[in-house]
Amino acid sequence: MAEIDSLMKSTCEWLRGRGEASDIVMSSRIRLARNIQGYSFTHRLAKDEAEDLIEMTESAVKHSGYLKDSWFFRHKNLSSLDKQFLLERHLISHDLASCKTDMAVCVSQNEAAAIMVLEEDHLRIQVLQSGFSLREAWEIINRIDSEVEQQVPYSFHQVLGYLTACPTNVGTGLRASCMMHLPALVMTKQVNKILQALAKLNLASRGMYGEGTQPSGNFFQFSNQITLGQKEEEIIDSLEKVIKQIVDHEREARQALLSKKKEKLEDHVWRGLGILKSARFISSKETTAHLSMVRLGVDLGIIKGLDLLKMNELFIFIQPAHLQRKCNRVLSSAERDFERASLLRRELKSVGLI
Image (cartoon, rainbow, N blue to C red; front, top):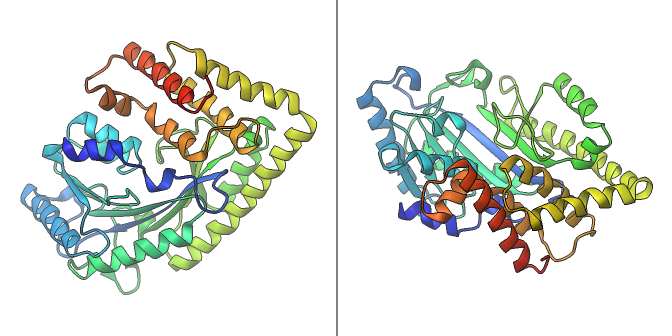
C-alpha cells in the first residue's frame, strides 16, 4: 500500500528525541474518547451505521485545518501486516489491529495525530509528541477535537460529560500518558516502589504498547485512570507533577550508578552494544533489552556517535511488521531474527560503531 510505504520512509514526530527530559520521557500522549450523537456504541452498531460513521469522519477530517492533508485508511484496504505496522508506530491500538470488521484510521502527515474510528468508541483521537510535552499535545488535540465537533455532533450529557462505551472514560474522555525509559530505577530495584505508589494515586502503568502489554526494555507508560469529575487541565496537571517526580528519581538513580557502580554500569552498556554489533540472529525481546542499555549509555555520554532520534527509531525498526515491510515479504520467526540482526549491524556501522 503506497501510503503505508510513505509512513515507512517518514520520521514519527514522537521519535525525534526533542522536548523536555527527552532522555527519560520518550513521548507524551493525549487521547480523547468521543461518540457521535444518534448512533449506538460501536459494539451494537449495524453495518450500515458503521459505514455512515466512517464516511462522516472522513468528511470531517477533510474539513479540519490540522488534519486536511492526512492519510485515511479503511479496514478493507489494510492487510494484517499493515495493521501490525500501524500498531508498532503507536497509531492504532491492539483492539483496532485485531479488528475483523469495519474500522478506519486517520493519520496526520507527521504522525503526531491520529483518529481511530470504531474502536471501543466511535472516535479515539490521539496526539503524540516527543519528550515531556503534555501541554503541547493538549493544545493540538484540543484544536483537532473542536474542528471535528464542528462537523459531527458528539454524544454529551450536561451533568456526566462526554458519553463513552466504558464508564471509566465518561466525563472528559481524556487519557494523558507518558512513555518513560527507567533503566536506572530498574537496576537499583526502586521501580516497584514507584509502581505501588502510582497505583495508590489511581495512575495506570503499562508497557510500551499500552493497555494489555507488560513493560519491556525498561519502558513504562503511565496514565490517568479517572476522567469523571475532573477538568482536562486538572488531569494533565496532576500527571505532570507525578512525571516530574519520576524523572527526578530516575536522574538520581543514574547518578548513583555513575558514582558508586560505574564499572558495572559501563559493563552493562558495552555488553549490550557488543551483542547488537555481533549477533547474527536476535529476537525483538532481547534486542529491546540491549537497546535499552545502549540508550542509557548514549544518555550518560558513555557511548558517542548515536543520537536519540537514531536510538528511538531502532526500537521501532526492529519490530516484526517493520522488518517485513522493509524486506517486502512475509518472514518466518527465524528469518525475522536474522534480518533484525543484519539491520542492527548496518545501522550501527552507519554511525561508526562497527
